[in-house]
Image 1: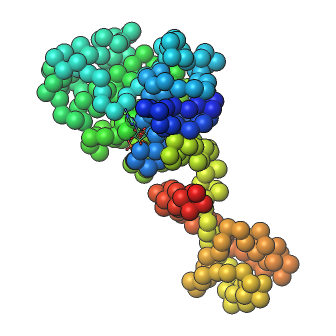
Image 2: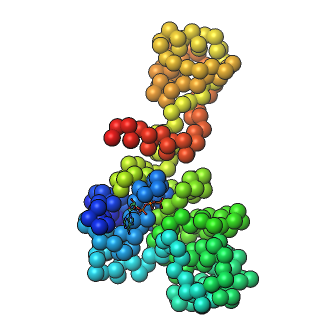
Image 3: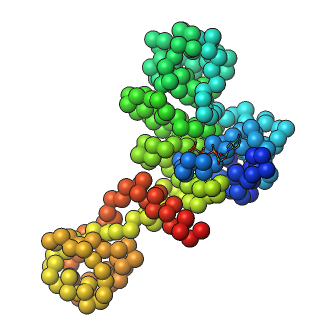
Length: 292
Ligand SMILES: Nc1ncnc2c1ncn2[C@@H]1O[C@H](COP(=O)(O)OP(=O)(O)OP(=O)(O)O)[C@@H](O)[C@H]1O
């Protein structure tokens, strides 16, 4: 539904976004991650027609250009600070955008804003403003929602609530592009990961592929550890051992399975070692910096 093709964004003659291409399908939750200054907010602003760019951006095949923002009618967004009129109440802010009062009431209830929604929003805390901004982005059941650091300032209950809301909307076909530095939170919902650095896309993968390809180590549990250790050593396969369990590199697992079959050995379990998502991202960025 959202397509970016060779997009470049320049700010003050500096290339901030460098030949970025990716697409997002309905119902997907795309995590846009990367170090500070990588260009996440700029990509989001570019999609929303807020910066000059070259290349093509379209939503449902309808192009977004500098002068034509019609395709954005079905897009909800929260970028940087929520666009809230401080002298209006939260409800009055929502009414400015809402097509359907039931939709508005529903969001107020689900986001637990009932107690303060009729108070002037200038008195709201950071988290209260953030929830109001998320509600504005989700009004009218958009086809695409763009959220820049949505969990900023949210307490635990609100974080869970927003996560469930995102999941619920995605189940109904809304696509999400979400940037966050809270990777553990993003990891719970995202179906696709886009990692950017210095304005370039480094990784763009369904999360299942990303997890599979980045699991470096596998646990190998065997019946006869002594024979296994001898076999791996004699075939120069590196391993770490803890009693009946071995840890081996992902690249050796097919050879190991062949060897076990050949020697009629019984393999009890072969499973990826749980790897921390943050560690994987740090490793990829390190590798990229070294190769650059
Ligand atoms: N209005 C601007 N004027 C000058 N430079 C800008 C402007 N907006 C963004 N930049 C530069 O563009 C680069 C990308 O910034 P951007 O805000 O998109 O990064 P980000 O990935 O969202 O970072 P963060 O995680 O810190 O929010 C940075 O080097 C930033 O200094």
